[in-house]
Length: 244
Image 1 (cartoon, helix red, strand yellow):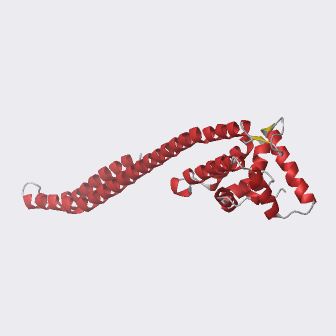
Image 2 (image 1 turned 180 degrees about the vertical axis):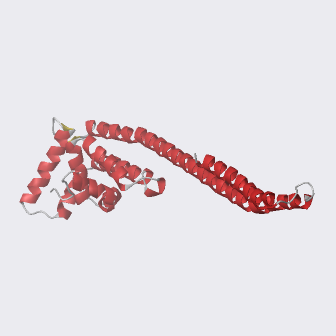
Image 3 (image 1 turned 180 degrees about the horizontal axis):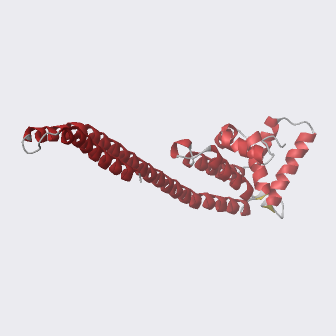
């Protein structure tokens, strides 16, 4: 529509310039046959008058065309960026839910007993509750964090507690790195995935993770304590790392 207005303006300008010249000279009584020089001057006049106008219109149309091209390119860039973002989310989704499934397998295989040779051994959530009971007993007699840490380390001779913490920590780390600001994501994206992780993790297993963060000096424990997105997700679910 804008281009049509420019065309109309150009036509009106050419007609107006010619009309002004005709009124000026043809109405003066000068013979157009005898005064060919006047018509030669007419061409110079038309060119001199219209060239700047038409050049201006051409420049405006060129600028408009470039703006349209830039808008189109920007839309294409946004579309490509969204496609890359969606592909990253799909790729992460596969790994993410595989990690959640691996956590469930760890919980199913988690077995524990306070007394060596005790039968039957506690398994899964029941084993974790068994450990929590021991921690609560130590708290009741005034045990400090260091004593509880030693208690847990002594129990975890087969690194089962460490394995559950490590699987959770790796999942949080994967979400944090793959959904980083540098990759075009936001803290909200990371928080949504971390909330999903928390909600899809068995509650007893999640409590064991929090217990490990609170008492054990593992690399994963330190990482989770210092991860702002994870701590924000914990706050969202009204939880913390000092349950015991």
